[in-house]
Length: 390
Image (cartoon, rainbow, N blue to C red; front, top):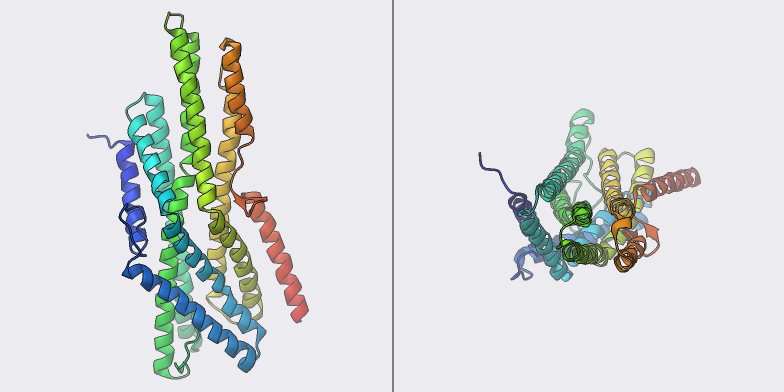
């Protein structure tokens, strides 16, 4: 039986990501990528949604004078804004995305040829990436399917025509049979594009973040190699452990650079994602409690999924940074190192202690605890709004 190397499995993951992104007109991993017709079609869809939403807001405020409909209209604006920012960010930072992808490929190609403990870490990492991408795919697929199916199921049960979302098109009479089904079809297409585009954009970030623990694990393997070299009694001992120590310092620099590029590349994506998803959940919760919107609960669950997926990714980086510090203390035989080498490793440890994780803006750390605090704030804000309306 032929054993598939981790580098080949990573190449398969990259191919899948490219297929998803190319269907959104953003195959930015292609060195020859240029904005194409499909890119403009996707941007046109998003801009059309914003224009129609503005028109719908006008109807809600000046014709219907219904605050609940206004909030229902705003519920999906955040998701559209997220998609817009993610697409523009991918195009704008395509060089960073290619660099990170190629850097990971180089690591897989190099360490697939090394000792067994390195290969085990690579295999563990690629398994983690596949599991997380599959989990996110099925989470998004189930929630978007429930969101879209809620309207026809509600219509069959209650014999009432309602819309997937509160979005009307100027000049299209949605009160007629033809206008209603045409509008529902357009809304369905927009939601399918939106759900698929969100997943395609998020797979890039998932791929990069879930590889951060692998970089940390390889560093620990290098610590093991250093300890073996320090315990060796032959003449080449000094030369060997100095080479390994130099490699460790260079690897830690690579680890910090990898995280820094991710932070710089996804700064605005994370900020917009966390801000809008909080507003989406709060608005949807209010609408679900105070009005009829069958698609509201599935959409709220979808928003919670995206919230905690991003917070979970932030926690992955946070935990990896803490593990690097802990390993630097406990996994190295410090007492075998000469004073000059201890000083070099001590400087690396100081840098590790100052390595920050992902943040929302520049102050709030992106972590599960932040997600829980945001959830509490959303609930409080929603209850206050409901009491104010009552």
